[in-house]
Length: 133
Image (tube, rainbow, N blue to C red; front, side, top):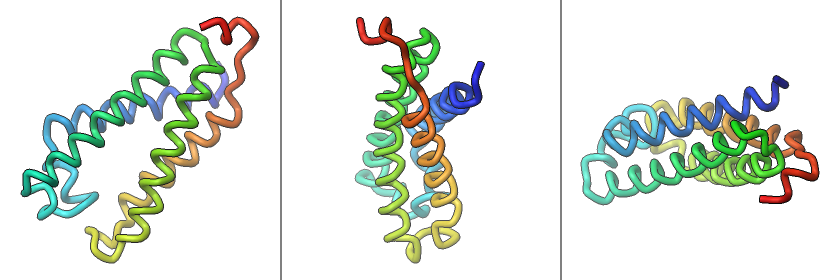
């Protein structure tokens, strides 16, 4: 199996695991990401859970396509990952002075995820049979 497929699969699995954790325990996003106060409010927990649902959907979609060898479809999922993670990186950078650890942990995670997603979006290529579904 080629490294790009492995990295894309690991990113997808990681995204699902983060999503499941944040959906079940939105307060776990506080210490390393947005700050403890943000997850103490109903609105803060709602936003964390909304992002968790987004992450589960993106991760399951990409993982499903990769597992079935539909690389062209997986490439589109990885493009969606890159857009989501790229936006996360930009808005985290903008708010970094008001985040735990000046946002370094969140920026490292979002930046690395963006890079892997961009790699998958650029390098995953399916054959003509991928286009049938």
